[in-house]
Length: 204
Image 1: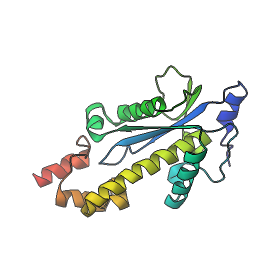
Image 2: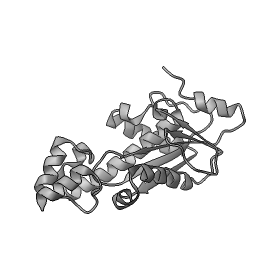
Image 3: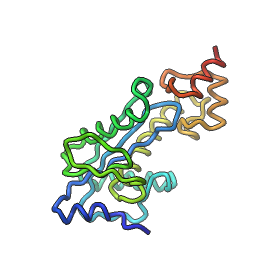
């Protein structure tokens, strides 16, 4: 099991304790925003079982979401909508969401640990490949981002139950692709994504 505070400890030695872990979720879905979170945890923080949100059950994610919200020093959320994703592409939209999340922190961090994405900031940062599985701060951010975005998909599911958003969260599953062929695409779909373009053609 990797030491999930390895990167944080390297910064603690330099007397840097306000460390923000940053991660985003929602690059692959056909609908809705990309959501990023920035989380500053207390020094030497431990939360047994916390890991990359993709490796956790929904129940576990919801439990950790609640704990992190109560115990983190600061949390920032960044949301970039589907229209902007279409305009600037998903890679740039993911970066923008992360920068928004950092800017929405109520305390300015001294250092950023970010999952795989180099960010152009006036704050020193370290980009870590698979960071959500290697850094506790990034893992915390991945949980906050995932639960936040899933909640948006549940809200969408209540308005449009025929699409099955509650189950697939907007990802291009067989069920989802069949639904958009049958019912068409909503305004908050990502029209630059190929399956959405193809569904539009079928409907037209």
